[in-house]
Length: 172
Image (tube, rainbow, N blue to C red):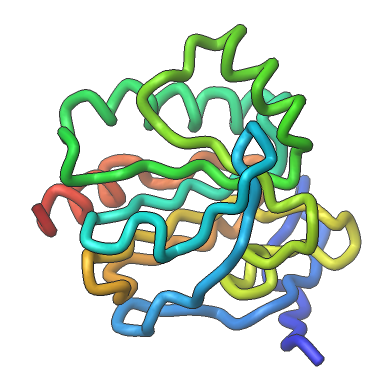
């Protein structure tokens, strides 16, 4: 049975329960299996050796998630090929592909956790009441150790982009 964290986040001030552990810097990054936009499996091992910035969003079709994903897509060009930015949501891969095409997202990987919520439960971002992800950022080094974590307390708020990007840059 997965760990439940009552009051783990809020949406418009209303408390919600998060399923999964509250990870912290220094923890080993849990493995997961999500789907790419062409329905192929993607896991932590697919990017081992690189610094990874996982940007977790509830849905690409919402204003803050849209802005967050566009921001990290812009920043990706400055980080070079030593950092891989992966946006995770439970949006269907087909919806992600449509959204990415319309938004011009071409420098980051956008993956779907719709199938079994493997990422969400392993990283403690699944909102029990809504079956979507809470907003969070995880920076994982090339040896699969978590170096930075931000669980955004209010789902509608932006993450701290500057701190996350500084953490990623500090590892390259």
